[in-house]
Amino acid sequence: MVKKSLAALVVAGLTLSGASVMAGNEGSGEPEIIKHRTNKDEAGYATAGGTASLSAIQYHGGPVMGTPTVYLIWYGNWNQGNGTDTPAGQALVRSFLGGIGGSNYYKINTTYSASGGAPTGSVTLSASEKTDTGSRGTRLRDADIKTIVGSAISAGLPYNTNGIYFVLTSSNVSEQSGFCTKYCGWHTHGTINGGDIKYSFVGNAARCLSGCAAQTTSPNGNAGVDGMLSVVAHELEEANSDPDLNAWYDASGAENADKCAWTFGGAQSCGGSGCSNVSWGGKSWLVQRNLDAQDNKCYVSYKGLFVVRDLSPS
Image (spheres, rainbow, N blue to C red):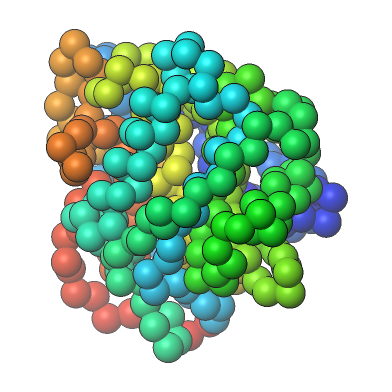
């Protein structure tokens, strides 16, 4: 997890596919890049990643979400006809998020129990969406993302403190705190209309395939959106297990998906349409692995292991 303070906003983010970024001091500004890695191994597969246990992730006493509801806010021009920012690309996002809940992949998040509850492994995709064609321009700041979410709610998107609001930008939109240069997406929370609202920014990876996608040929013929969805999965997992940035993270500040970032496991199917490692909704996807809190290992499928662990805040 990367915790940083920009314009009084604390966020946790997924850094570029060429770098693993860990937390510096909270409020210290930009994240610190501490290790570089390539996206592909010699066979052309997206990096598998190791199988050993990682440093322990710890529970810090904050809430987790049971079954979050996901709301989509389409920002920018999603009707460009450029092969990525298209209605077909939007349909891929809906198919992905409509099927991820209850999948063996997403069940990994059920290991993140907390005082009073645990993630169920399910996700509800709301049928209510909003489109914002550019109310804040094409050069966004972190604070603009919160404004975009608030405006969408004011315009009729359901208000739900158990929701996660995803601001998904088209490829002509930049995020000035570091999209494509420091990170590919982030999640946070803030007070909107008097309640604690969880939200996330993820940009279309077509803007920087070499930084925010593991491959340029993708299972669904849209490398920008396919790459974007791996980031969406990452931020969704973290917002579910650490919605207020005070629940599950390790001693360095890394959240569950951060600890497995840009690794995809060895069970990849690769061909002329790129690599994939999971399937649902009649489609194949390439998603980054997630950490199982029971054994601190990275997987793309829930193992159902039973390990007794202490949930006392540390």
